[in-house]
Image (cartoon, rainbow, N blue to C red; front, top):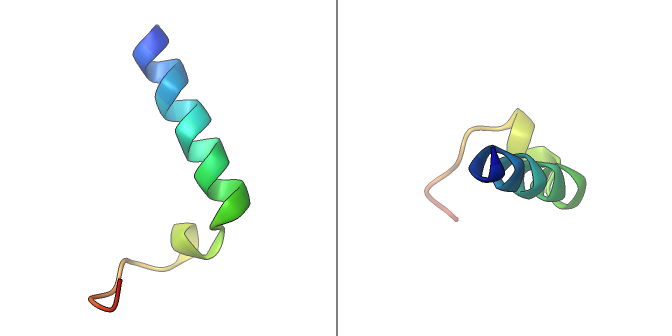
Length: 30
């Protein structure tokens, strides 16, 4: 499924560039 692949790619990209966002809930300072 292309949509799923896009999400996985986007998630992997975010995980490698913003790993702290995966461990911490979003804050109002964003």
